[in-house]
Length: 76
Image (cartoon, rainbow, N blue to C red; front, side, top):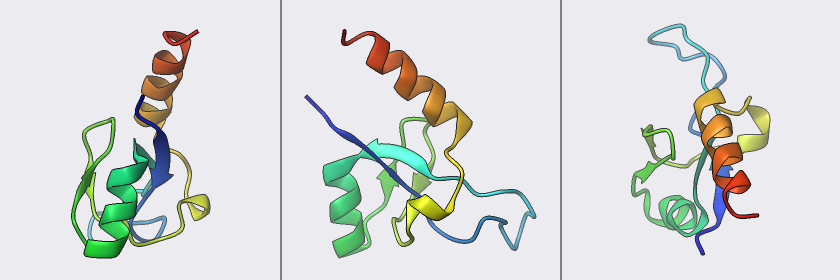
């Protein structure tokens, strides 16, 4: 079974686009590896990011949240 964890990359508002940034759900092993090595991680919504910041400081990506909830419903 694969575990899921949240993570994100920078400030809540992207300086380049002005859009809000989100915490994303991704495989916890991949996120840990990304923190240590700087390797990119793919979130369940498809966003590719390098984990660098505390995900608790960001709102959860609505697409990741919807997909995670759907996956959790299928495991009961």
